Amino acid sequence: MNLNKKLIIVVFAVIFASCSTNNNIQVIDSENIKIEELEKNFNRVIGNGVLQGKGKSNFSSPFIFESSGNNSIIVFKDFLGRRQYMIEVNNDSIRYLNVRKKVEISQEEFNRFFPLSNQLNSNFYKSILWGDTEALSKVDIQLRNSYVITTKLISIDGSNYLNEIVFLLNNDKQNYTLKFNRRNFE
Image (cartoon, rainbow, N blue to C red; front, side, top):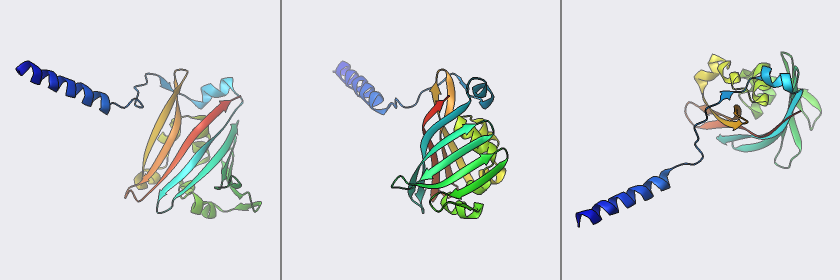
């Protein structure tokens, strides 16, 4: 009888362990990608993703992007797929445009759409588009004090690329997620 109890306990332990494992979590033993290395082999990166807001402000805005040299462009779309806003980065300058109205807008106006934009610099945008995790180490300290920043990486050919960035307000009432669905290097 004792053998049956032990066997039942072992079977339940195996079943419990198999149900509780998460195959999405993987230990990746590779190094993070650097823009400098990518730019040696590629002229530009293009792709798409989605910006999501959850909490007081709920929305989902798909985006497309391109980055080459010192120029980067991110175009955000509305729920119908129409181009809505654009961030244009050239060297150290950032321009914000309302694409539907075909006018340049102030950073404060764009900040109503994506409230973190006033705390992100041109190097941050370029780094995240190329998938370089170094962007997060250079984030302004004021932003770090206001938001908890978490990331997810994706491993491609032995290198880790930035795949998702989540900015959580310290009070957890609002978060913003930048998720990259695709990157093509040319």
